[in-house]
Image 1: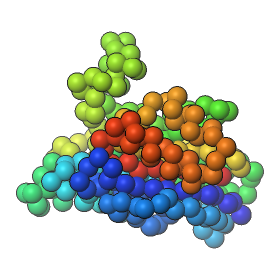
Image 2: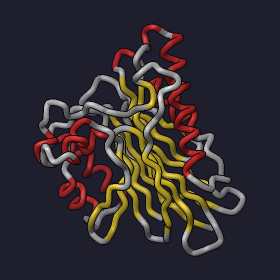
Image 3: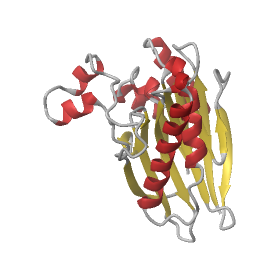
Length: 265
């Protein structure tokens, strides 16, 4: 038996609607505004060995970005407990891209819709160390706590990330760069059914007391890594940490939907 504690929250924040969606187990949560975070204890067993967790950030505004994030999560929850390598996740993400594109091609008002995703697959086994997978497309993020620091497991698929990697701008300059927020990869967005999806997928060893943070870019656009680490290291409940993350992001002028999942193993 493997107990996992999950706390989640989603809010439209600086927008007039919420295009984010969350996947907690097999449940998709898509609400304009959650009044308070929700915490759950989820038990992973040999009979129910897989837990799926994800944040999807829909794009398109009036072009139904909220539909894109829901379609993506409906597809992602098909990942099976028999997963043995990253190929299954890659295949599912390609399917999710095609589902979003097909929706956009059928509905002219939704043409160009798309979504990012950042997800965790946690798989029970009989060893003390369990198997996990972290994956993302776009700029939604996954962090893993390491000591008092947050290690980013996801890779931002953005123009500014490429500029940083090429040594042309600094991390600080990226926050206010004119191209900030411009994606180089997404599910949907470009209405090409056969487009190759560049997904970041990595296998993890998951132990008791491991700690993860998943979030949409509405949080990380507003708060830098130092602020995230300071809040996550506070001696508060996960519920209060989520509230503090949201309040600090709004206080910093958060302009986008904000969605957060804290996972404690």
